Every structure is written in structure tokens, then in C-alpha cells.
Length: 67
Image 1: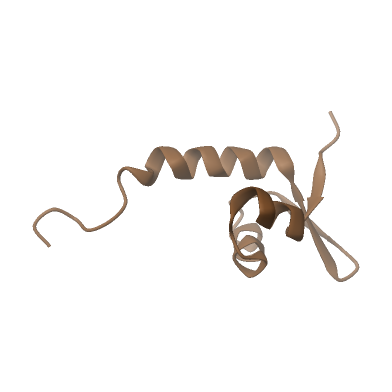
Image 2: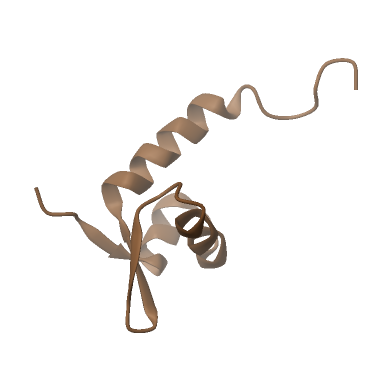
């Protein structure tokens, strides 16, 4: 199955993340991306998977009890 590549601008619209943050996620290996020339492309499926995981962990984020 071929990857469904989208631009960082499209990924920002989907995720609400800034394109700079999306490039950090690519470099950290949290989403699949590749650079074509000077532009980054992101795998839509890897972004959606990451957003789902982040949403699932969202309830666990924030101040720790007793802090």
C-alpha cells in the first residue's frame, strides 16, 4: 500500500500543530516523513495514528498528583 503523503501545511490543518512542531515529530521518529527538495511531506496514516495515541494519553497529561 502506497503512503498517503501530505504537506506539513495540510498536516497542520488536520492536527492543529504548527509545521515546526510537525518537523520535530518527524525528526523524533514519532511520525513518518520525508523531505523532497526543501519541503517536508508527512504520511497521513502515521499522523492520524500519532494523534490517536496522543488523544489516548491526553487524560494522563498535566500536573502530577501531589505536585
